[in-house]
Image (cartoon, rainbow, N blue to C red):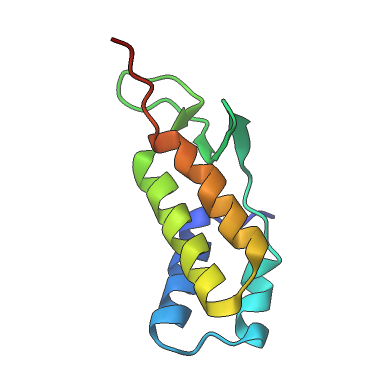
Length: 100
């Protein structure tokens, strides 16, 4: 079954910060693909339960930021360009379109 994005992010960040990230240690994490959706050209990790006054599916800014951070750190530590591309695509959640 899917591991939560938070689990993957925390594990990858801990390995990277501790300086223990090797290809053998990160590979099991990197082989997991957390469930994500494409929204307006960016990738998002959605929640499928109601929260407050919101209805599913919804996207958490904290989850998006954690994902971008984990993917970026993974790219820096391991050089996996797919992680860099995914981090860049996830940044779309933070773009604001302004009209005058």
